[in-house]
Image 1 (cartoon, rainbow, N blue to C red):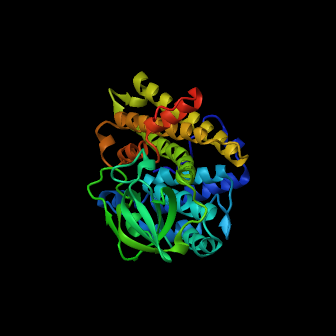
Image 2: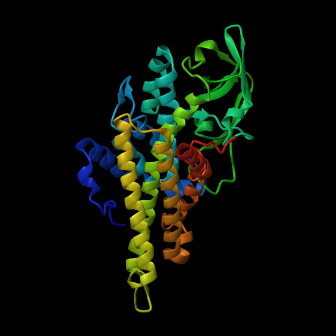
Image 3: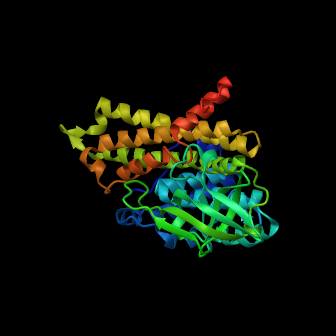
Length: 388
């Protein structure tokens, strides 16, 4: 297998700074050396390659765009490029890093107490501790405001009851950021592993994100010390701020998955001979490859400008919704085209295409479904909400 050189039809490399290229190259080398040789084994077994966590932490990939408390503080383009390369390896690895950084470390940094920040952030950044984010419930996915989870103050504790579903990292997490209603307002709580009444169970039978840990979290009269409340959380908007951070990383990650599928299809088309010549010489195959390259290039430019907007403080949540919505849709489209070009080989894991295709089916609907992001944008441009 030839070393991955990247997909850069528009010379975007020249628009990147030295720090950004270094971050991308570090992540790319890690994926080539540590992820691609083993990921098919873990995908087949339906297990997460947890032995990679210390290395991911050592390289500074966890919460890479966060600052203070010993965190790397790279810019958002560099962070996005890291997410791109991790997902080129597998969505499960990018999902782990996204959850750890954007959905666990970010809310602690933004909404936590000083003691919470000092204790948790260095440990989460190094991978010594693992976190998860509990917002979605069995009956409330796209409508988190209707959540049933509830906390009640009893002396110097909160008593938490509820269930959270489809939680990445749930069964391996040392701490869960759990969102529940307290006196009618949604607040965030740190719930540590081993607390009585806190039970996790891994979801079985997945055909997507097989190398990722996906869990159900159950809380039954779970007593949480008052100091485990994230004190600055104020309603659902706090949880949605976290989701925006994760959705940003997903927009970049989808580009990585698309590049992996495009590269596999292009190389296969040039080598596969039918009717006496490579199938890359046929017009219909070339049309598919050109479409794939075009959509990757558009997605790259979208991500790059979004990253620049984010670094300048000008990115809005609707900008992020557009990038997540578009890039995942196009990555899934590219994966399906690549699978078509590979024919029967497109359904076996000798090639990465079917693994990315199945993973992208989940990425298409998590962190806000494609339809929900469409309606977020619809509300933004019309001023009319379709949710009520």
